[in-house]
Length: 621
Image (cartoon, rainbow, N blue to C red; front, side):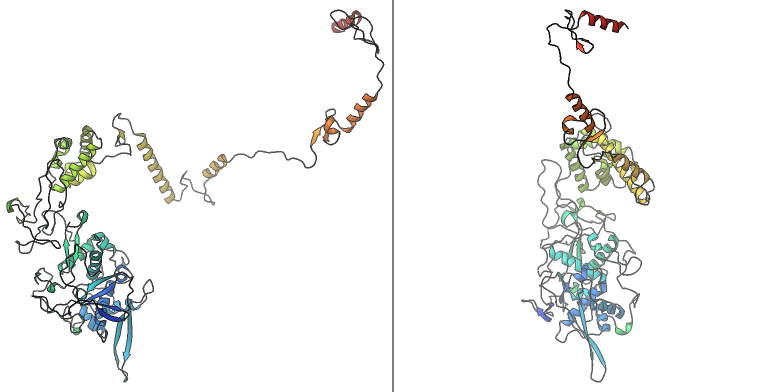
């Protein structure tokens, strides 16, 4: 963690006596005073810090106790003689059993998931054979490795799981990261039992944060961060070293401030357990102190005005809905509840400003005490148009006690009106949805109005109102298609879970396809077309006279006849024809036997009268 904390953090101490090893030798940050220099009114306090690699905090491979052991061993190893303390001595410093400390050292001596060994131990034996405590040292850290500065006093005052939460908050504070309890829970794990390896629930993580806050190592400002998130402030000094913090500021603190000494000394008395007192309750070789689930008791924190623990109003920084209202100036310091009743708790670097409202106008809790100051800006005022639109749900709107929620409701109505939604359409929507529920079933009216009543249900078409076209009153085709697609997708998932074909719902065959899929594939597959194979060699054809198959080569290409037909044709051509009589114009074209007729043809025929008579006789016959 950087030497300069995040802007939202409270720098409640000068940064000195920070211990780390570079190249195996302890170094001191320049410009720092002695670790034992007192703070006015606090006496001798513990100020030593060590640099811890974030891989010990992030990785689920390391149990929570490994982080506490690492911090204490590295602090003791910063002395010239190194860390020579016995396991029982380290356990007494941390308030743990020797079995838990030994378990943490064993994990640190073994290679992690990335093969890195964090702790090295060198055993020693006197010349006479008597053994001595081992000399332990940690590996030097590289300059590119992510790390966080942790006070050694925090490892002594907090349980291992609380120390891991403190380390996460301190790292996020240095990097300017806005943490949530869900993100903290994702970095805390069960290391034993049936849920080993699983992350803690948000409720269990919230309980751990509350315990760290009760130990005064952490301050939680409710809804004071960005987007209404809680703001976590990790303190770098022990509670007794911070001026202005009473020793009995919380129930978890002792009645008197403990006499603190240097954390690197073996004579430390903070959180010390006598060596002869035995193990803590539930400790031993098999039980893990502070490493199980902390969800045995729920202690949620709310933002209700009746909650005494709520510090900052969730409406801080919100802009008023009403138009024409004057700008709201948020005070530089948000006044909150204090232990004395007359004081105020400030944000970092701010100056206290008392509330301008009289005490009679402030919100009061159920028991009559003031829990926190109300909103100091103009009162919420809705426009007549927005108020008329909300007429069907006025009975619920009157039950909304939070100005923040009321402003969100008014903004949502105004946004929909600006985007073109008709007022009668909004009133119809509110009336229809209110008629579907019982008023007794609505536990949070504001949440129901924002999440159920006001949102438009339907597809992306702006005129679609719950699958009905508002202008025509007809059913929306796009919504019907979406419903059909969703139904088909659900049916497909159900069939896949049952081991059936997703398309037909039948049992697939040995090759992974059902009979219907095979049939569909066969229907889509085109039938084969038989194409006659072309024979090899010359092209073939049929003879034009006898019809036999011939090869189209030579003279057959020109005549289209086979050899025999060509020979017969050639013989007829060579035969000597009879001498023909000279042609006379208008002569008969008939023959008398084999001799052409020489008679004159009829005027309308090409034959003579004799041959014409023969033709007529032949037709009658």
